[in-house]
Image 1: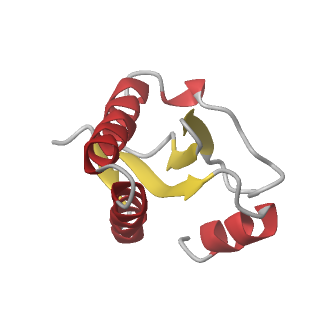
Image 2: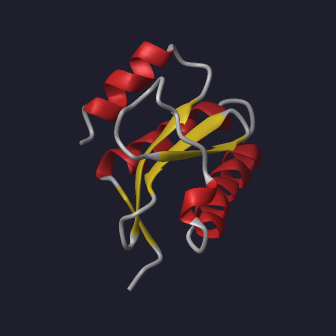
Length: 103
């Protein structure tokens, strides 16, 4: 059994992040995506270590930050369920709508 699973659209999030960063630096794009996966792996044993964001969702999701990206995940799911990887500087209303669409 895997430690975590990603929502299908979370894979799309990561692809879009990598494509955007790769415009400036393909090496940085790979490094940052790898660091996001590493951060997700590290939260698996302590899923409630992330913070809540009641301003973004009423769901019991937790968030960790990797660089400027928010990783939203369901801490009580096994395997850990990663809902989204979002640019943290986006409009909070857009982030909230994106999270609602992935219920």
